[in-house]
Amino acid sequence: MFLVTFIITVLKYLGVISWISMHLTPFFSQFGLPGEAALAYVSGFFVNCYSAIAVITTLNMDVRSITILAVMVLCAHNIPMETAVQKKTGTSAIRMILVRTSSSLFLGWFLHKIMPGESLLTVAEAVETQTQEFWPMMGTWALDTLKIAIPMVLLVYSLTVVQRLLAEFGVIRYIAKLLRPVMVFFGLPPKTAFLWIVANTLGLAYGAAVMIDEVEAGKISEKDVDLLNHHISVSHSNLEDLLLFTAIGGLLPWMLFSRWMVSLFWVWERRLEKKVGAK
Image 1 (spheres, helix red, strand yellow):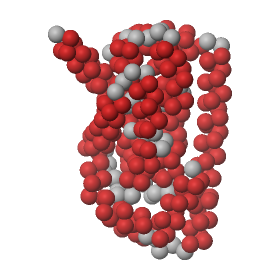
Image 2 (cartoon, rainbow, N blue to C red):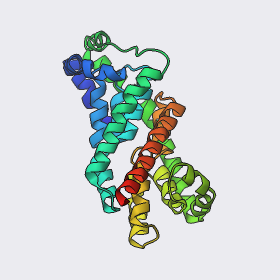
Image 3 (cartoon, rainbow, N blue to C red):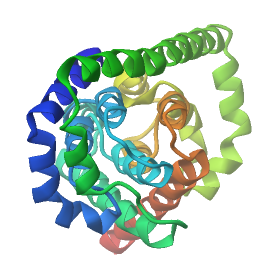
């Protein structure tokens, strides 16, 4: 995170960020975002949420813009690794990439249309930041990064401890039984409740081993895990990542419920698709 924010700050000083903003603002304005938001989106798409957050902290974005960009990144992040995990459990990699990317772009556009307020950051503001002196800018960078990094480290560490304890004492499997009615609402088989919790607490990358083991052990069918993958591809890691984006200004209800809405659509669309294909 320190490395990414440092590179972005230097690029901002050199005027590269202003150049990117000028050329990409017409496209990203469809989502109510400035062109430099592309750096955070692409970084998150190919790496992870941490790299996207690192970029966002270097940009002067308002709460509305952070929320929209956060939703887009949460839908489509760490694509290479997480797609590989979902392919390993039996779902088409190309399909998952298309589902996540289209969901990301749709929700960015949709939230821009329905969220109150207007995006405040303009290209002019991005250009203005370039005029700062180099060393004062570095001092501001170091201070701002520390302010974000320390709470993030404490949050991630605390969540990891809680997750380990819940798994060690079997609490997660007990909670999974209670969540079976929730699975029915989402259009998911009740037996997917445990993996749903794993994906929402550990995420796809860290929960990969658990998910693959469950599938290979025959505890869940490929058909059921395919439905689950359509849900969690858009909505997973709703503990750590969601709280991290909230810590930098994102609005939690918008970030959570908007993705649940889209994941609900994809699961029921997949069910309909399989039903029609079986006839």
